[in-house]
View (cartoon, rainbow, N blue to C red):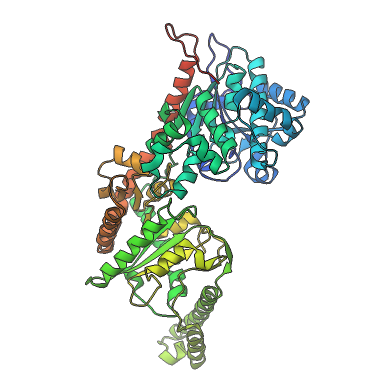
Length: 620
């Protein structure tokens, strides 16, 4: 572990060649917007183990999120001098700790102060890099202002520390403007740029059902103009070409970058998580059992007013993620459920399958019928709790006098009447709804259209039943009162058969929580698993072949897997969860951080003056 003599100063020790400093720059530092936040947040503590006080993150200052995520404190040493110079130029700067594991040091730049220079900055983007922008694009304006603010930071840092080796690792196009600026100004900084997903690739994959087959025919400039994202695309491409080392998160995305951005990555940096290992296997099994009981309560409230089934023979499946119906494999998941439903109807062992689809869609409110059922269920639960309390007092009083109470003493006539009234009020003749909320455009919603087309409408004789929850699950939800991690632990399997997924954290999170999962080889995570763990299916992590198999063949493979899973008994499912938990260490940052370390060493090597016989020329 690196020495941490003066954690707040980032001052390198005096030596012939001081150890390098590492700065990591991203739009999502102290600002949760998407997957980059998860990468930075989970990786920070492990990065600090290697870099110690020589590591610092840089992000944009957002007052609302900084108030929660950030603790300010005075800077020291060269960083203090740099920030003072920026403040003298009119740039408010904030230095302190990111309130996450490891509490890494963070610099937040109030990029809005550069708005007065925005016309000049955008002119330089056009003159020096050929990137034209429009005045009305507020997001691009913000990104350019932030990128120039970061460039100013490094200009001052290199002036204050002229001989110091400095690494600057930038993430995504929103953090990438400074990369071509640094190269153009010839600052002595080794830069790494990581694209986690090409911006143009996301648009193309959403529109083209044969994206990978047509990728080689794409004209990137024309496509970016067609989608009205050209400045964003141009920033991403410029950062990829200007970086000392260009990286991405998976081999799947590497294929995209070589075609859409025109540069093959120098390294693949797979994403990881902080895996919490339990001292005893029964600990995570107990968590599963406890949270499964909470899901049972939701299911009783949702389905039991109409009909009942055996909760001890019920299996909970789920898929989740951004509402990208095809990219995230929601179409694939629903089709597999329909075929599984048909197959289970003729099976001798018919467990009930409850399949959750969790995403965020445009909604008006929670469905009145669903909310009413759960409200009546809570009333019934409270009534039973009150009767239980009264029965306990009666039982104790009788036992204290040396006798057993009679049935009518325990369950009085008034209690029976209360129970009957609650039961009658709760019961319903309607079929349980398949969606928990009223959608803004119910008739044209692709998930609902598909469910209705395949007849997955929660009929009593359907072994497979569906709950479409078009809001992300939180502990404050009036329906499923669990946070997302608790919900995942209570389920039996997560299914993520993505068609387009540059990495894919959701199946990885399942494995980290000891939950069997399904992914596809068209996701970065799935491709990584297939290469690193060939027998992963035997350990509860199935990688579907969607790259070379047809849609029908891949779905039938999933249906076979789910059917076999549905026939397992409880002990066999426990054993499978134990095997999944055994895989989790493969995806811990401690096992994967060496990829980042190698990329950093490569960048330093390429910018070192001690490389005889080599020369690199890159036009920016």
